[in-house]
Image (tube, rainbow, N blue to C red):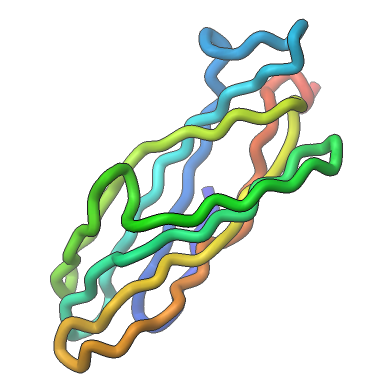
Length: 128
């Protein structure tokens, strides 16, 4: 588990290898990740956009950008959190992801970039 606080928003990431949906003989590996977004500040914030960098151990890099997360643009009140689960496929058994969320302070309407900390995607058999 990794976490990072930016502008009073804490991002916590947990990852899970998905062996039932992976096909190692075809170089297809699926990883799930759970993101918890905690508002540690005094004002509500809204998640507007995401921007991901995905890199596998073959050196392949992808970028994914878009509105919201899992079809949502959640508003998170002070002291509250929002959690979602998504997934990422890789062509190797190891990789990493990192990125940013664009969020809006709902009082000032100011947008801010929130850092999504780098996290590793490693199939458990690589740890042996």
